[in-house]
Length: 383
Ligand code: AMP
Image (cartoon, rainbow, N blue to C red):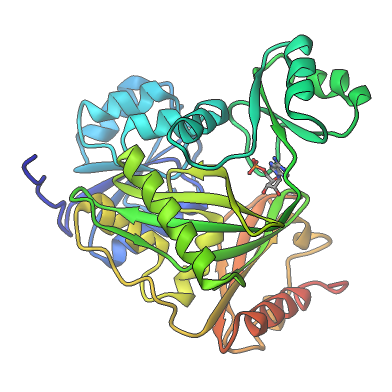
């Protein structure tokens, strides 16, 4: 295949989706001299605030999608739940990277897990659930405990029920509200890690250091790098990610969320065809951030070094509850001069909403976690 021409600085990048991932992508793109047009379902979005143009329309409005894509040289997305038709329409006008097929597979858990299993990538056993009979059969075949999830549009643990006993089945199914579900065997994992890989049109592949992730209420709380795992397991995780990006023929970034099992094995939990919350520490911790890497990968530029600048880096999420009763005390966090504050320009700090994050890069991952969590603690009177 003839190599596609690179999309050079000065060109316009179109972004479908307008949250914080789009915002940080737009900032990285502008640093490289690109212009950015954002397609947003809402006005004054986090990405729209820092872009050259914010087109405000529902994703279903194909005329506006066409108008948006006609004016840009490449389209990417920061949110995988855009309707398939939207990426198809955009693709009539400009290359969409990663392409609609990657989006199609990764926006639905059942399709994603089936894709992975059929190609030999390790996942926890799972079954499609459309009825109580399906659920009873699945529980019989793969056992309890398990997790029942909606097949599509789930994130941060939304639409997820733990099923511990046979008595939980009916209630868990009711919580799906009639949507198709997926039942998975519960993984008694030792830890959760993620690998963010980038792949170019020519097949060049580069991964970031492995991130180790800690969740609170199913939402990412703290990430650090490098993950505290043996080198051999880290290498295995990178090869797994490489294999998945190659199978999907990703051009752009893809995040692989993994469980490390108690026996030291790896299971893929989920894929995201984009940058990821766990990669936010790359902004201050790595030579190239995940957002710059996304720009390089979709534009056909050589990929950047993902090396850590310091031996350890960490990130702590800032969720909406920190704004209760009042705006966090930013200067208190910044009394540690190595702390970097990132805010997403959101005006409505709802509980559980991702409003920003703190980063640090320092002498060890343990010290990075300790200092970033201490800085977050100082933000509110009760810590
Ligand atoms: P997800 O929305 O699939 O990424 O799930 C959110 C979080 O729920 C994960 O990061 C895990 O902490 C937990 N989780 C999801 N699936 C399972 C599973 N099969 N076994 C154990 N924990 C799970």
